[in-house]
Length: 358
Ligand code: SF4
Image 1 (tube, protein in one colour):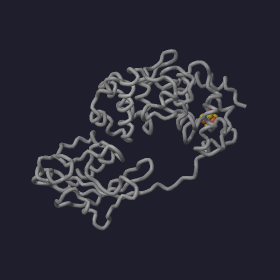
Image 2 (cartoon, protein in one colour):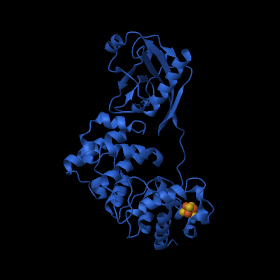
Image 3 (cartoon, protein in one colour):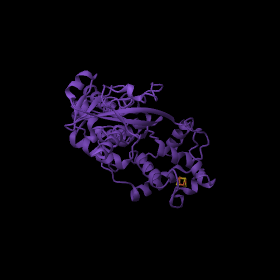
Image 4 (cartoon, rainbow, N blue to C red):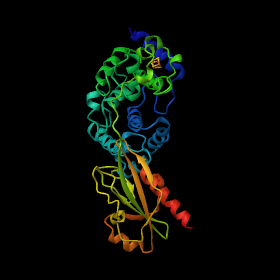
């Protein structure tokens, strides 16, 4: 039988010793600004802490408060986000900043229900903001915390059906004191001790209560649903270079993959069932040119599918004329940091081809 008081006390004593110092974090009874908590939580969705830190610092330097972010042009926000991936998050971030700034007088909502009204904020993020920024006893269970709870209580229902039970068990061990520290302590503990592989159960302060440990089946939890093979899509990207060094770039449509981002024209990969003519891929070129298909392919994995991208390059002598003929797009000097990861890889491959041809 798990003793909730013992578990939370042991967790806090571990956290006080080993918890991470992160730029968006404060220790109880101090509370971090809701703007910082929200920004970091949105960035941390699908992205690791070490990658997020420089982006977080850059965002709060450029836009010190939510009103500043709300007033910023979306293009600037997307450019600052480039490289973090999952660009819908950046667009939602901007929408939510406008909402808080314009509809809530710049004050973040505090309850989970009100926070859920913000674009890009789901149940975990709402619970985390409510607990961490406002010290409320809200349930905040992300994938890492899910793992700790599922192991501790030996929850045998597979995910995602187990989520409700995991939420109830979280609430059962949630203490009355230090509500803002509790989810953060669990996150750090999940990251440092109760890791997906090779959990350090020997140094776990509540190993004596852990059902998965007792059963010798730590890595079996949480029970995952049977895996489906990831869909593989094929496509082609076109990198046209002018002799002046500029390249032809488009701004992708706001909706869909890499929405609103700068990109090289491409075809065949962004939507399920999109037509890609493997026999004549150059038919999809944005304009006529001496396109050269490269042997090196770009591989990239998104959450729900993987892409194998061919790259075609061309050197254009009269870029102005081409721009008039192409639908949308412009000639620009390429700054890889403005491109999403897939397109950065495309650019790297295209660069290698240019280097090889010299
Ligand atoms: S005993 Fe191991 S599996 Fe159980 S909570 Fe501790 S670290 Fe996680």
